[in-house]
Amino acid sequence: MLSPPNPPFTPKRTAPPAIPKHRCAPKPSPAPSDCNVQGSTFKVQRSALLLFASSCLFSSALACKVPVFRFALERWAADPILLQVNAPESDPALILLRSLSPAPNFRLKSSHAPGSAPGLSLRLPGSPAGSPAWWQGPLTPETAAALADSPARQLIARHLLAGESAVWLVVSSGDPARDSAARDLLVKALARASRDLSLPSGVIPGADASARLSDDPQASLDDVLRSPLPLRISFVTETLSSSDPAEDVFRGLLRKLSPLPAAPGEPLLLPVFGRGRGLLPAPVSRLDENAVFRACALLCGACACTVKERNPGVDLPFAVNWNTSLRLTLPSVERPALTSEVSVTAPSSPETQPADPAPESPATFLVLTSALLLTLGALLFLRHRSA
Image 1 (tube, rainbow, N blue to C red):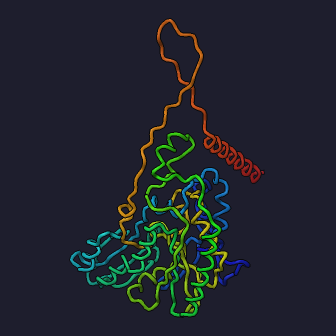
Image 2 (spheres, rainbow, N blue to C red):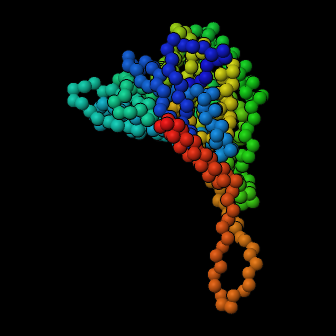
Image 3 (cartoon, rainbow, N blue to C red):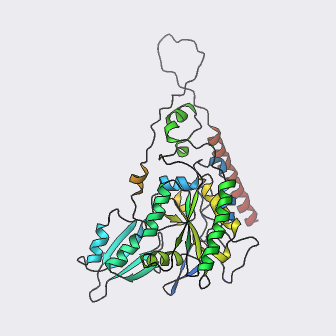
């Protein structure tokens, strides 16, 4: 979920935003936000960019240098989305789903209740058993194909595989004037982001990895680019038309992700990055240039949270072989062994001398010190509460 504009707008129905999960912060309980899905409600985690940024301050010294959008593209596999199919194994649409190539990021589960009509049910990645469906409908070859792929998603994938930082989508509701205003907002915000944001320092190109990692003991494989794509800050915008039947299913999936209701005819905005991962869509009336800029800054900043599940966003259905298209490589590195000069008197008989322990790196010292401070703080807090 993108952060609200300044000054903050208080919607009629809100829930306290959850601090996105972070590898160096305690795991928070997600804050629910009601969103209508097929006449029911389900809970979605609302991503607050300001809270996310503040939660990452503690670990900024430990952050990997690769920006979030590139780290997500090269290293975060797309989450499998549970697709439940009610149909006999001989159903043509089920056969089509099993034969799609490249395969979409579905976890297909089929069963058949005798006497029932064939149907599809899609569930959000990580949603608990029994939760309402993200999307459901009749099982036909057309709906099966539209769930897995669409022309807009193919275009988004081409942009991302060409090195774009993110693709900003305008999800149209059929009002040309509002769609145009939404695109104008993106043009201004993205021009500012391209001008004012910069890439993190310390990113290591793949071609330089072996030499840098061999010479610099503080360099890390986490800072190495894995693909030959150019690294740059660059955004593109695309509009998901409300009149294109080929995008009906994809448009419906995106609208059901928005925790905040949109007025009739109001478009939604969201960035798609990585391997088809999107921040939660927001109605354009809840956003301004600063909110869009902050979302861009999050995606272009150093990836402090390398664990995917601890970052905001939802993986969307895409039928793309990302690994093959990216031509990923991992450099082999041979670091010289640590040696220590010790002045000793030669023994009369040969024996093995114990090696001096290698000095701890500043990063290791920082981790240990931080862990100690956190432990002491927790003990003092518990003692204060029990007093």
